[in-house]
Every structure is written in structure tokens, then in C-alpha cells.
Length: 281
Image (tube, rainbow, N blue to C red; front, top):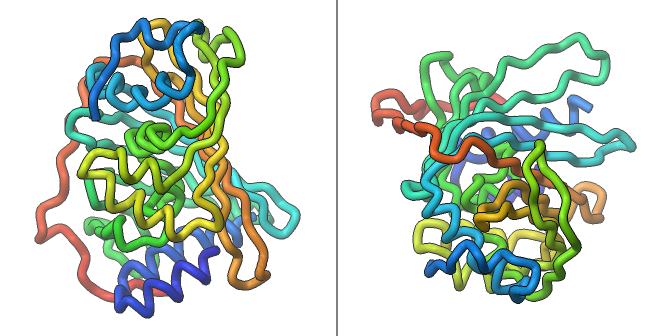
């Protein structure tokens, strides 16, 4: 997966993105719209329509805290990248602290990577690989073959909801709880091509890239909405083509949202604070 992304980016001449993408994801392997009323989330509503309105409902909610996890299996070992932060759904900006797993021996600890999420861009600090500690690295998400749904080690929370705009099938599973909050559980399959066509103009380029770059445009999901129709948890299962082993790699990305309305002041770096040099492999 990493090698494939790196080759694509190298052909496009994006040297910084090559090193960034390869460095983050190789570490994982090596380390071992319109809206609808909230009542549309009721069990009797059309589950597909409920999914289509999930992103717009988050916009009305304004902001929330977020926890993310990304799991992938490599070499018979399952590794997980975890993140935590805040997100502003109206501005489509967020900040996460992303923690990489230890190496197989358990001796190498990695500093958390600070990630800033914005329409069309991903910023990373504490990137390592020769990047000064006080500098940010910027990645054009539309230039990544996965649209940054997995490259950064965390799926942009708003993009996760926008994927649901592409829901082609969905069923209401039943009531349950997420972190003590009563929710309604839905399960279905989204299509990235449809999601890109229905997405906001800010997220559309990245989702178009993902629709072309994944092994399949179909994305199975489980979504959990509270009584106000707000997405509390969503789990997507993406499939990549592994260029090295000529097979597919399954990546499960989970986003948990809570404390809606919390302040989410995200300040993007000034151009002088963005690293423009070479990143070590």
C-alpha cells in the first residue's frame, strides 16, 4: 500500500508527499449538502436517507471532540494508530494528536504527531525524518491516492461523514449505546464515486481521488447516531491494493465524536512555518 502510494506520488513529482506518506505508513507496517431534521434518525426513517443527512447534521452541531483509531494487519500482526482532538464541522478544520504504535520489540517510543486537518490539506508537526521540530509539513490531500482517508493515520471526521453521503444500502440494526449515550446503529455500504458527487466542494477532490485509488469504491460501514441525528461513531472498512504483495490490505478506520459544541479553535500554520526541504526516507 505504502509503496504504491509512493510510486504514484513520485510519478507526479511530489517529493515531499512521497516521503511523508511513505514515512508515516511504513512506520505503521514496520512498527508492527442539504440537511434534514434530527427526527429523520428515528428507526422508521429510510436508513439510506438518514446516512445521506449525517454530514449536514454535524454541520448544524458545530463542533465536537474526536477520537480516532486506524487498524491494519501486516505480516500477521495487527497494528493500531490512535488519535484525539477537536473538530469544527462548519469550517471543516480540526486538530488531532496522533500516536503511532511501538516497534515490534516495544523499545522505540514515538512522539505524538500533531495533525491539522483543513479542506484540501493535511499539516503535520513532530513529523521526524529530518523535519525541524518547529516546522510543519503540508500535504495536498487531493494529490494522495486515498484522498487522506487513511494516509495520515486518521480519517478526517467530516470526510468520514461525507463518505456516508454515498450510502447505497443501509439497514437499521437496533438501539445500543456508545460511551454511555443511547444511539441507533445502522449498517451498510457506501460508494465513493457517489459520495464524491454528493460531497461538499471542499471534500469533493479528496473523495474523487479515493474513489480512484482504493482497490474498490465500495466501503462497508457501521454508523451510530444519537436521538438528535448526530453521528456519534462511524467505522469504515477500506481496501487497498498492496503493490509489493499484489494483494489487498484491509484498513478499518473508526471515528468517535462527543462533547458537541466544545470550542474548536484551529489555527493553520503560516507559510514561513511550513517545511519546504527534503524529508528523509
